[in-house]
Image (cartoon, rainbow, N blue to C red; front, side, top):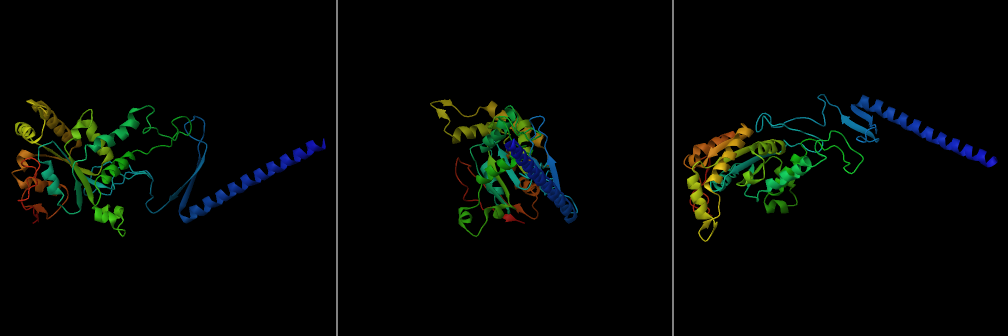
Length: 348
């Protein structure tokens, strides 16, 4: 009997200690709330109810600094709304701000002067462009599609899921854009001498640059149609200018393919057919229609190769002032040769 009484006393003592600890914790939290409110910090204390298996039972304390204009962790702020990308939809979150980086993407058909465009526009100040990347955009898009097209859809779940085989916290909308942008940034790094310089922070070095690349394989990335392709660009590269280039004279383009590339085995031509070249041009025009201005601009090599003013219109469209080309280089004119004769000048 004495042993039972002793055991009861021990239990009462333990319960008292637990109760005291809980009360003390609550009082400390309330004091923090009062002091933080008076000092400008808001502590939002929320306990998730574990009644559906979707939300957990963890107590979360969210700290938010208030200012005259209260900052929200999820917002649509566009830092370039008055300049580079006025119509961009910026799905900002604590994980990703996809509009903070400006991009210039040249989407072209092959044998249509894309390397010339690369060399021309890479001369512009505050811009760095890279060449072909084996259609890497195709594989970055698959990162997103893998999550979207499988069930459960991990990118559209509105709440944290803390249990089950697919347990994960909410993935903010727009956050996959930073993964795609970082991939393209890695493929277009600053010069090696800059990377080797211990005094230079590469992120700071590049933060104000317009980064971009050219590709002649974008149409061949497995898109259902140009609408899907345009949506991917808008979602993942929202603050971008997309220059769409084609050649209307597909007979000339077809002849250039046959002369330049070794697409034959014996007498059989294995390159793109005239029909396929027309289909790609149709894709380019549809991509332009779906992206619309001011995000996209369509040019035709049959026109700009003979008129530098068309390229200077692109320069203005990119936002440059008092800056224009006085001539056009002709890269790969006779196959894979660099134009060493034409002097490229930029100025006014």
